[in-house]
View 1: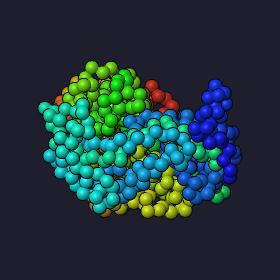
View 2 (view 1 turned 180 degrees about the vertical axis):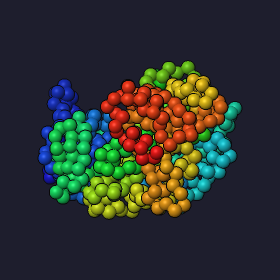
View 3 (view 1 turned 120 degrees about the horizontal axis):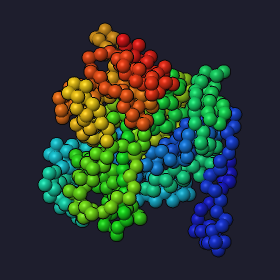
Length: 419
Length: 116
């Protein structure tokens, strides 16, 4: 199928600027839903759109609809702190997160959409001796996995990050796991870029279309009741993060998932002073500086089940308190915005990319607090699973039956925290 | 800030005093149970968008476990009750009914019967 949309390039920018930018096309179409598709993906966030994109690109399945209850990329894709890294302990995690990180490297070119991937490096601070040993262990694992990380000492940390206070009174900084090719990307652009590419290969992105019922056995097809009428498909992919449990219930099964709020906030913009991502897992604070100069701050997840996209003030206070100790320079910054997303936490803090108890229904969920970094790899693995009906090497460890079998991919212990 | 009244000591505690223990009224499976039963007990959750019955511990207070009926969308609390029970007491169900007439016949009352 030929490209329908005009390519973004320096020439198109020059041409449009001569026309006072009046000629830009919409980035993706908003068609009416058809009666049936080969594949329907529920959830037009990063993971859902990436799944659709790789179904088309890698497997030639283009008769695809992506349904979205709200607006495109309006869930957790637009509500995270945009950190990208792959320094995981377990081989299965390292494989999929590194696949994802490496896809991010060339995603702007692949999608012809600037996702502003910035491999500025990620520092994960060790602030207890236990954590220091843990990161040395992860570093060793990463060497075997072929992922470039390094265990660095406080002097080097101070060199990489001038504004850090390495002599914190409560939790002095002992060392850090440094991944130089980790970084950040523009979160909305990831969703928009995938959406534009999906639309370009003829897929239907249908926003404001809520799935209200699922009949998996409608004459050999899966039939969805939606707020915009009935839609049939041969295969259904559920990629709805925090609402996975709600959707699974409609299809008749339960998940090993609980939904909780994860919050983040940004400060007023200031001059560039922090050109790495710093994560402090012992005290729960993550910080990076956006291109606009805002400090982007994240913390730990709230403790109780929650679907309200807003969390407790106490978590914001804890996060900010921890960061002020490490970065005294930010103590008088005003915070501009604060938000919460509903994340889907599994028992082992690893995702699920799997067949389900229902034929032709597949699920991709459980990314918990680490969803953004995994968007391309997750879509890649989910597309392979849906196209072939069986998981490939990336997805197979993350099957739903691992909880029954006790075959966990235990990143909750490896990371020490939600990650 | 979420505030809950501890049914034992009567204190209105805010969440910094409390620790959440997840869904309540799970049936603990015995040694003779199947793998499916164990998976259900250990991992599978209803994770409702709406009314949830859950366990909390008054960790920084009397230290006791208790139960809460709460809405996961609005954070409205319908009441708290002691932990020594397999299903929500009738006063809690009445309270939910009086405020949320349409939702009582959903998974919550089924759950209450299932584990009674």
